[in-house]
Length: 391
Image 1 (tube, helix red, strand yellow):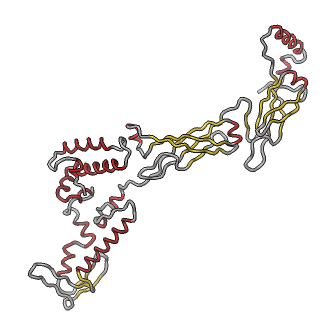
Image 2 (tube, rainbow, N blue to C red; image 1 turned 180 degrees about the vertical axis):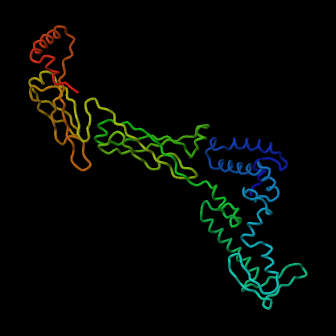
């Protein structure tokens, strides 16, 4: 285990002010916002843990006396922890007293196994060297029980190695180790990263027909807290992702791309990329449900005499017949030429006829059009045209 004073680069006689100054310099040097490699992140964590101990005068005294045991924030010294040792073994005094007492008595082991010993079966003697001979309890010697406990601790150690986050801690059974219930409450668990929200604008024909789009996603290279993002600009990365838009999508619909969002905390999975669709308006085409409406410009002659014209549809162009004498806004219906429905079939395409007046700059032509308009006004005066207009 590394010495905490060496990690901070100070002597054991350093003042608290010197320790704080050393910590600030090293924390600034190894801060994750300035470095992106794992080795530097480990150094930053070591510096932080060292300052957590040495920066606190009480914990520093415990470290000077007990060493690495003081790294546990719940460790208060063996004097304060005696009650926790007693709760596990009934107290060391009674533990050793059971092995030295005479006469018949109950023995309650640390595993909750009861046995009975008798003075006629077991003896306890003190050698001249001052060492205690072991006594037999239910067929086991003190050495046997000690070795059994060591084997159990070894099994716990091997089991802990199987987990990438578990580290064997001999004090976990006493409620103070890093795997104890106290320590687990402060463990930084994995968390899924936050979602990235994005608006994608597409053309109406892309929404109607379906499309394939490629989106560039920008996100931090690793998890960064909101506070860190405010104070420091995190290092960013870009990823080009593919989005398949099905036919018939509407404005306001959203698509979720799994694990394409921000990085997770403590190695957790990425969040999602949520794409919100906005369909842009078309110059001639609009949609109502599965039906499409196409504004079709025609000239005055076509409106008066009728005509055969070619109009575009979603699949191909088709020829339609305009009857003579059509009015502005009159509709022609093409069945099955609209948007495909999920349940099968398709909507209809409506052609909205829009007669267009000529835009000419020749004054002579303008005078002829004006004269013609005055002649036609007798057939439909302004008050007659707007006779049915109401809200």
